[in-house]
Length: 214
Ligand SMILES: CCC[C@@H]1OCC(CO)=C1C(=O)O
Image (cartoon, rainbow, N blue to C red; front, side, top):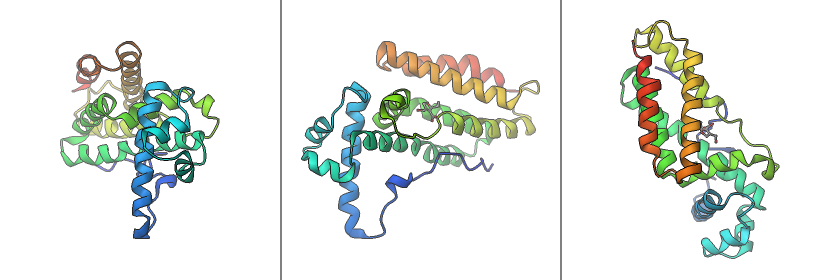
């Protein structure tokens, strides 16, 4: 099935497009090091609790070297948020490769998102920074819409193919799944730093997703 081109889900955000000049590879690797160090700090301390100096120290670089790649903490935060969105097209490709039909692809996508929120610090940081967007003060991609559009399309295909309960509206189911998932991971993060996320996800999966099957 061909899912729609997802708004805001560019697999390589403009700020991260690799230069064709191979000599830039080292700069790209340094950029990625800074991004990952920043993600660790933003995920743990948030935007306000993180300084460019903290990121430089974690990356074992000078503050000036960090500023060369990211001319400010706000720009660095936007890059981390953009990087977290790039995880989803890659996840979709892996989910579709399983060729488990549209409903199977939905399950693989949200299972993969649960793993990402449990283990991927860039996703954890991106989600936290999205919630702190007012502090960043720069435009960020619109959240949630990409997921809702993708799941609506896949669930529409599942309905057409008889995989979805005939009384289920694909859009309503997509919005409910994204809301339940986002709320589940947010509560797990707030209360237990996501230590119980996989168990909480299996409950949502069991009670919200599996009952949608025909
Ligand atoms: C899968 C739930 C949606 C996901 O959770 C946080 C967030 C925005 O930071 C998301 C997104 O729009 O990709």
